[in-house]
Image 1: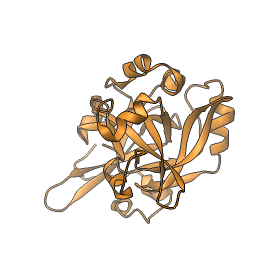
Image 2: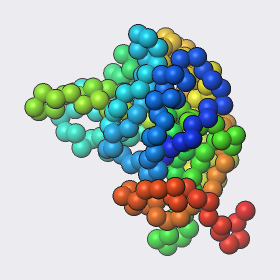
Image 3: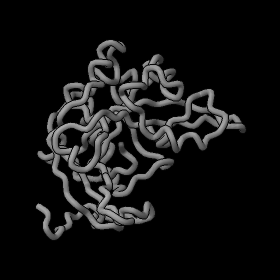
Image 4: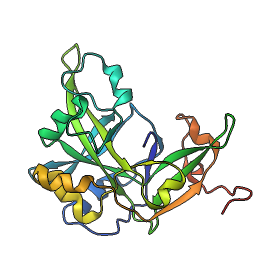
Length: 229
């Protein structure tokens, strides 16, 4: 599950993948959003004739046949186990419309009993930034003929430490798989849908992140919880 994430610098990817530094990492300089919510327009990475590049897209995939844009609120995530067959995602998959979603980290909420839910921020343990989520994209045309580019985040069963906070997680792709996800034939890309363990740092953070209007580095500041780690 991924319903909120953040993308901010400084950016220092763990592996300098050819083409990504100049066409993706460097252009992200200065971008800082600490509370990215569904329906917002964000940078995603797509394959192009000259290599990978950034394109702005709205979070919440709208398949080309969608009649009501409100379905985008139910398509912010695509389960890896069913995306090749589920109507909302299968066209994008079979057309090879795969993308990467650059993130610094993402948020999960853990039920503390009653109405209280404690948010946590998950980021790469080695502080590589950005990480890349596997994603799919689509172009949808509204009633006025305007095209809207949209995307979804691929999720898998949670593995390793992530299970402390949720049973699902975004599919974080290692740097050596970025090009494969963007450009390889479907059979090769399918192999990247298997759940994997990603070394992560998981910090409790303040409740302010619950309001998507709130922004700023204070949202990701670690919070000490009594009786916690």
